[in-house]
Length: 364
Ligand SMILES: Nc1nc2c(ncn2[C@@H]2O[C@H](COP(=O)(O)OP(=O)(O)OP(=O)(O)O)[C@@H](O)[C@H]2O)c(=O)[nH]1
Ligand SMILES: [Mg+2]
Image (cartoon, rainbow, N blue to C red):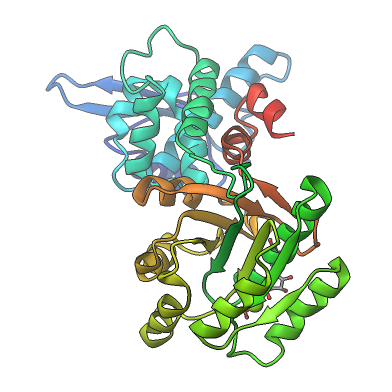
């Protein structure tokens, strides 16, 4: 028999093992087909050629054949990444192969299967996609994700009413740096009068870190040790448009300190609380942080350290699981540059970039 050789198996993994044992580890898959046996069972028919044998699998003078093989390989790679993600319905994807590029991208971004299902449903592509190209599916998915990421500007114009915002989160997530970035942006871009308060009484140097930023920006900065101090400091900053409160980083498991934090800021209805989450954290860590900080009734998420990860699916995973608006995202250590107001379209494009041209245009 001349190559390519045909192999039959019920799973791709089984087929791959079969091909490797018969043609060697360098074997190349040239096509895959889903076929139905006489008994009605579905199985894969896979054609492969030896990788380094004397037989050349491709006629180099036939560009069409090469393109076709490349296409098959890309399709197979996408299918493999879907298969390794538990819970994704492979039969559904095989039935609707136009969904594969979008699903593959979402999986590689760490978007959970359940969330992916919701996205596909919102995009209106879960079923009945026969008339759509995969590019159209991608565009719909990008739009759906954008619509599923609620955003909110915590300092949006609301008359002359003073805005008071506190940032909370685990140790080192970027609270103090984010406060400095927010303060600088509010002062420079929105001509706001800003004041700072530190209630981080745990870490030596915490107040100095905030005070240094305050001095550079030429704004007042107070330290508060007790709820009484905090009221006093707020009183002294009454004339400021915005007051930003920095808090001590703490383990989400330290219930005593979380209670203290609640006593300090959780009971004052005029303080809006924003929870910082490191995008690079695992989803279970994020969920745990959110669960522990939820008694503070925080208003928005601020996702930090976008620059430190290539997997940002947890943004949408988290928002779908525990819905809150996103106010800011930060992506770097530079003050004040590395902060942006959250924008659903941009975030969606960032998450799914390289998936289609429209997404890239929005993201840039
Ligand atoms: N790469 C990157 N680093 C960041 C970002 N935001 C903050 N950092 C860095 O993270 C480190 C901790 O930042 P802080 O602002 O001190 O964090 P914190 O939450 O106030 O820390 P504690 O007060 O100790 O809990 C610093 O080195 C920051 O420069 C970001 O968006 N990207
Ligand atoms: Mg800090």
